[in-house]
Image (cartoon, rainbow, N blue to C red):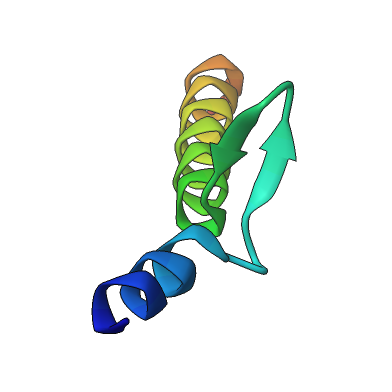
Length: 53
């Protein structure tokens, strides 16, 4: 009975997102968002040209 309760607790994740049968953890979404944001800001920083005339 204890094992069944543990399994039920592990299988129910209300915050998780299901896309095409894959369970996506909110922390994974956050990590992907931060990585993309960091990359976009890095590229933007490299493309900005500040002229010092």
